[in-house]
Image 1 (cartoon, rainbow, N blue to C red):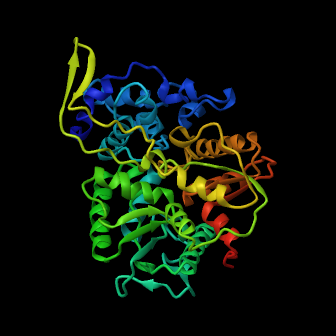
Image 2: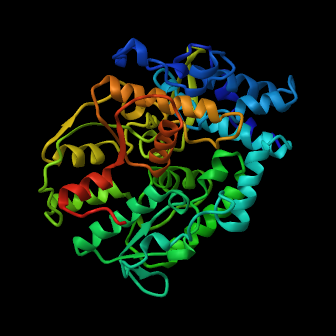
Image 3: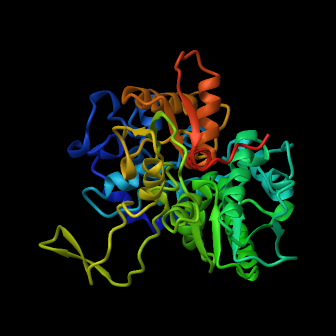
Length: 434
């Protein structure tokens, strides 16, 4: 059961507890109040709850110095899987911190230590196609009345991948509906999978069910490759990161081009297929979703040898490209927001590859619900601190989690949570669906 984890043993041993995985690198710190960048480390204030702490737990397991138990699992499964520790660590060395954390989770699952909430979620995913036991709506009901082509019975050049969140969240369903109407307005030949749309599988990946995720990866890849579409557009940033970056790690990826809605909409705006003509007088900031941002950049292919000079200086022959997470989807949503007349845009302190997680990833359990909520509220505090009256994101998971966390809090903040897609539609003159 330790085979996969043992492949990362060298990387585990490179950690010297510098604590970069807990905070924003000093050269980019803009506010002392918003310097923590690991959600679980910030909440628990204990080193074990950090990228570094989890590396030492994993290393102890591979060396037979520690047998996993429920407390070990509690720490490992509290991680939000945001991937920040990997980006931060690469500030000084090239290691796969996040991949180790996921491999450690897979080892714990195989050891029978999966949280009960996670087991139920993955069981639902395998039997019902969603981690939600009784979702509000069928996968394709968000598109009712739009007359969209339904693949594979019909053919289209562009496929909208709506994602799972919209099955249980009204706002996410409305955003998917709005995206489709925008594409129809622009004359795009677009279709959907309707009620046959499966989950991208990311919830299984987050929870350490690597075998289940691998099966989903190959099934979905085969399905998407047979549709004959040229482009797949995801509504959620999480699905985008899954297709672009996580799928290749598990052996397959879709052949059609995969774009996030903001990337495709920006193309349409630049080609004047859509015109942002109605002013929106609002002061907004933008939250970078983890899987749309740093987690959407796949590793570059490389074949070579790791060497040492003078017994300690590590280098690669031939040189390889290090994945710093800087090539994720950062510019498209910002360009769209700034192109809307009347908008006043303020950046938060932690942005792009150093963005703070919303707290929704990793698989929330009863034990981690408060930590996940506090993570979202801390991010909302940051948005308010920079003067924003609206927090804009580009991921259904983030939008839903921010909204629910704010609703269930005692915070008296006058701030709205919205999606870039909805802002674009408002400026173009497309009203939200009822």
